Length: 515
Ligand code: NG6
Ligand code: CA
Image (cartoon, rainbow, N blue to C red; front, side):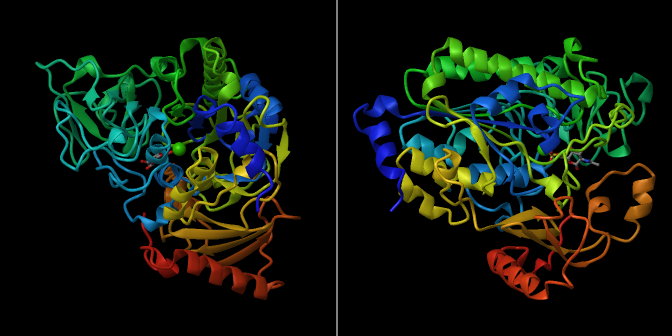
C-alpha cells in the first residue's frame, strides 16, 4: 500500500534488529518565526548552524504549529490532538495544573512503549501539579507522569514566576530554610517588583510583566523565598544544552527520544553577554544567534557521542514571532528591516500564516536526502508519523487528528495533509491546499485604543471585524486580499469542513471565545 514501508521495515527491524531503531530528537524553539533563520531569508541575523541542518536535511516551507501560542501548540505536538479539544489548553499561568491527563496517549508515552528512553529538557508550559502546588515538596504530576523518564525544565515561560528549574519532581537548589512560594493573584513576600522599583530593571516592562524582579527583570506573577534556586537568564541556554547532551550521553546505548525545548527567542531576552550585539537587529536577533550557537554546540556534542548517523532530528518553533511581547528591550527600535515572519502576515497570537508557519527541518544524515518540501505538515502529525517510524502504527489510531506523514517527513513523498485547522482562539482557520479560510471573531471594543497605549495583547492582533475571510495563498501569500466574494462556494465548503473538525470541542460553532 505504501511504497516506503518495505525498505523502512527492513532498515529498522530487519537485518539490523533492535539496535537500528533510530533515536529521535525534537528541538522546539520558542517564538521563532519563519523569517528568523538565514536559510529562509534573514539577513540581519546569521544562523549558520540551523542553516547547516537545513542544507543537509529536508526544509519544509509549509509546516505549521497547530496554534499561534505556546501551550496549545505544545499540547498538540505532545498529544497528537488538536488543542482546541481541551478547553484548558490555553496560555497557562506558572502555577496552573498539568493540562495533559496522565494516562492519556502522548508522544513520549508511545515512544516509551516502543522501547525508547524518553527525556525532556527546556520550556514546559503545560502546567504542573494538581492546582495546589507546594514548590518545596515533590511536584507531581508533570512531564514524568505523561511519558518522560527524565525531565529538566522551566515550568511555564521565562517571563513567568517561578523562575526556577525543576528536575523530575524537585525544584533544583532549594534551601529548606528559605521555602519558595508563588502567587498569581497578589504580591507575596518582600521582593521588589517592577511596578514599585522600575529603577532596578535592565529594561522597562508593561504592567502585566511588572511582578517580582528576578535577575533585573520583572516577571508575570509573584514569588517569594527560594532564593538559592532562582535562575540566571544569561546561563539558561548553556544549562539546557548541557542537560540535553547529558541525557543523550546517558542513553546513547539504547534508542532514545528527546524533546529539547530551548527558551529563545521568547521574552525576556537575556542572551549571554557574549552574544550581545552579534546580530544586526538588536537583542531579539542576538537571542536568535545564541539559539543558533546552542544548536551548533548540541550538534557537535551529538557528533562527538557518535549518535548522529542513527538519529532523526526535527528542528522547529512553537509559534510565530513577536517583537514586543511586554518588555521595552529595544527590539522594535533596532529591527533594522528584519522580517521575523518572512513573507507571511502576522505572527504570534495571530490567525494569519505568520502565527503558525514556522521553520521546520528534518535532519537524518544518509536517510533523509537534502532538499526542500512544500508538503503541508503540522506538528500534530509527529505523533502518528513517529508511531509509524518506531513500529507503533496502532497507537496512532487513538489520535485521529494526527496524520501519518512519515513518507513526507523522510522526503519520500511530497504529499502532506489535505487540510489542517489553525487555532488562534477565538479565531480559527482551515488550510486546504493553498486556500485559507478564516472564521474571525473580530476585535473586542476598546482594544484598538489599548494597542496604541502599548498593550500588545492578543485581541489587538485579531482581524478587525467579525466575519469570514478567504485567501488564495497561491497568488497572495501575504494574505492581503479577501476573495470570499469571488469564491463563495469554496468558502462554504471550507467552513463546513472547519466546523466538522471542531464538532464536539468546547469551541464548537466558534461560539465560545476565550481570551
Ligand atoms: C502572554 C504574555 C506574553 C507571553 C505569552 C506567552 C502578557 C501581556 N503577555 O499572556 O508576554 O508570556 O503570554 O507566550 O501577559 S507563549 O509563547 O508561551 O505562548
Ligand atoms: Ca512560544
